[in-house]
Amino acid sequence: MTPGTSSYRGRLAPSPTGYLHLGHARTFWVAQERARAAGGTLVLRNEDLDAMRFKLEFVDAMLEDLKWFGFEWQEGPDCGGSFGPYSQSERRDVYVAALEKLRTGGFIYPCTCSRKDIAAAARAPHAADDDEPIYPGTCRQNRKSEIVNRKFAWRFRVPDGETISFVDGNFGLQQFVAGKDFGDFVVWRHDYVPAYQLSVAVDDAAMQITEVVRGADLLKSTARQLLLYRALGFKPPRFFHCPLMTDEAGVRLAKRHDALSLRTLKAKDASPESLRLNW
Ligand code: GLU
Image: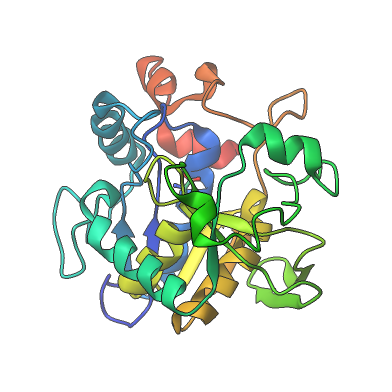
């Protein structure tokens, strides 16, 4: 179907922290196919907030590699659109406004804990299927005086014991218990950078994305983001999670898998069509 003929809005949201690999391409391809089938609009958003880890050369490479592979988006940092800017580094005011809303609504609290403090005090060990240990709640009762002259992050207070459910377009019903499957999470880092959970939820809402297609490693993050949608009064999109690609040894592909980066494959004259037939 012709893009832009329906209200479906999907997105590709790569982080330019390294070269894109075949695993990213496979998930993005699903996103593109779903947008196409619906006659929708596909948005490219450059998730470049992590200034410590991303480099400008990766932004250019990302656009080049996506185009080489056959991706076509209708809105993005290179072509504009009505929901821009499309690079997160240029959207700080949108995140500040959301943070303020969370703060005045009493949903977040300042947290002075370091990673080390949290690892030492965590209630549960690092869950194997997730990215962070469950925060033990040390700073939940922080008073203003405790953060004066100290660096702090803003953390979202999860409703302990509540089951967060959603029906995933691919995996069906998903349920996670707040405080058990994941704990209070950071929405604003102590280095003044908006955290992933906040920026992605705020942008998907602001860009009126109707379906988020992403990797299955983010299922639990989707539950966290649903709490943010609720707190901010946003209508959540639909979600469709894709299985992750692994290498021959069963290890999940990461940016360090250089052999499967789109850059390397292009240099070896691989054809995107045959790569798509074989994944
Ligand atoms: N920039 C994030 C990543 O590359 C986006 C994930 C998502 O929410 O789709 O992991």
